[in-house]
Image (tube, rainbow, N blue to C red; front, side, top):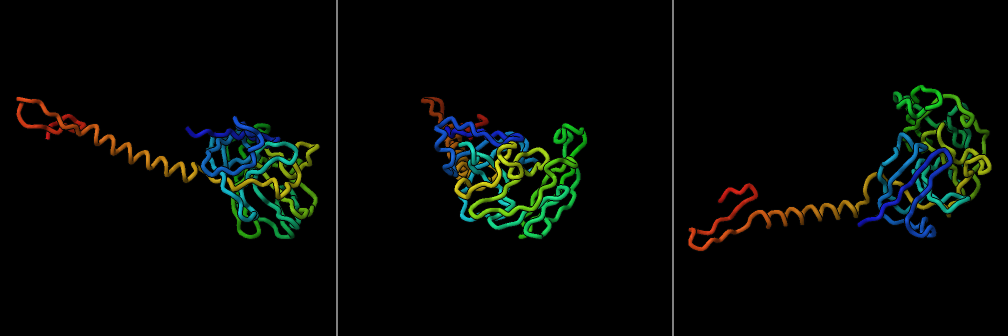
Length: 241
């Protein structure tokens, strides 16, 4: 039986309930399924969504990644916004990367529960980074973290944000204020991929084929009764052929 992990994420980040030694939390296992909890990556990933993790060959802006929290040995999941050397700024919730503004296009509204403090539905926004990476975010209106003076991502570190911008503590606040600041490259674990891992899907297809073959063998039985005429083959419906 495949053992899953539960990833829960609120304002403060992601906690992994591993059921195994915490020291293995940074090991990529592409055959393991993870169950996601929390709201900081809405609308991209919702509580209960299943995902798996692929190894990172190269980190790109817009990648949805798992990583070890800098101050604790727990697995987290957020989106890469700034690469080493990038200049990142936020003004009224609008993101600028190295002088280039990210494009934002409204795509309707999300559920009211996302902005519980205001009771209003969030704006659903399609954000596109310089370089082309595109994804959906939620905006609940003016918040303290909507504005951030320009900063430069240090060498060997990354700047990450939650897609549910007004309900995520990410690289914006320092650790002392509940965030995690810049993430060292060595803490990145892998890419988040929605759904079951390919190996799981192959196993299920193989199981389905074997089950179908077994069912045909079991339900097409040869019934031989001495003295009662010729042998009959009984199908699943029970009608003799």
